[in-house]
Figure 1: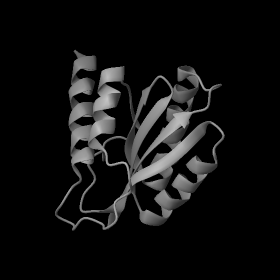
Figure 2: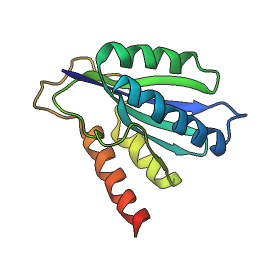
Figure 3: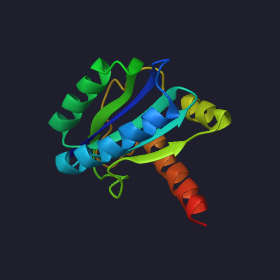
Figure 4: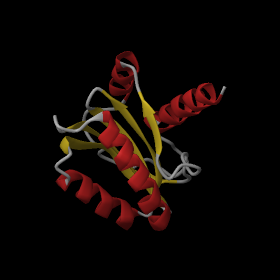
Length: 143
């Protein structure tokens, strides 16, 4: 069974949007090798990322993210088993959000990590919402 970790973080002051794009490109290659999928949303130094894949690989990746000096204030808001991946076509989807979109995401994601994992047939609203958001914006970008 796959696992999902969703977290918020802040990019270090020295991190630029160009640096984020470089991270995304590197992550796509690494994630393909590790069978990890997901999406990263970025706005003015704030990051929300959904990661899906084998639990051990995700936990190792999350530990490296926590230790990465390009991230500060890393906090997981979802860490649980999932019945299916919602970002299975993206080794690392990427989108820059408007300030309003980021605030909407923050309002939906709980502040504290999930105390109890959801059952297999439940999918957290944040993961469904992020997928819908990314799908919509990806379609707009291709038109």
